[in-house]
Image (tube, rainbow, N blue to C red):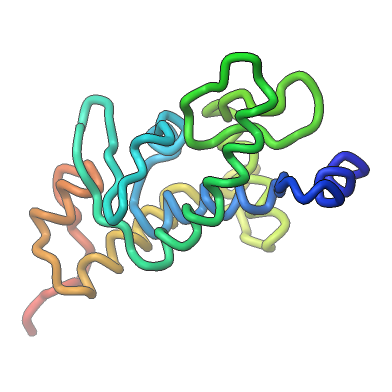
Length: 173
């Protein structure tokens, strides 16, 4: 906490909340998996799209909310990257003070952040020890794309899913 206050005093950003918000938006607004989110590089953020690499290479459109959150995160990410002799290219970097500051956020760490956030938010685990927000957040993004009128095939492509079949969605009755 003192390190954060010292950083704020110098006018240098270092907000863990901004990283958490960026992670939540990448899942819940863009539709990425946790693994895809932690594997993103800073250069993958384009003006209005996000380049997602890996087995399902694709460009995903960024909503105004996602663009705003990522625009707020990038200066803080640059500050964190400056703490390493050779800055890492990853989009999500660790904000905690110490020798790990500015190193890439790992998959297990991101999952831990999500479960802690779920606990903090009061999300109840259904039949599990801990709540998992990743899948519900991803489905939030899928529903948003579909509500905006995008074809299912395009939504499947953007989210890297075989088929975004939502029970009852588009069913005629």
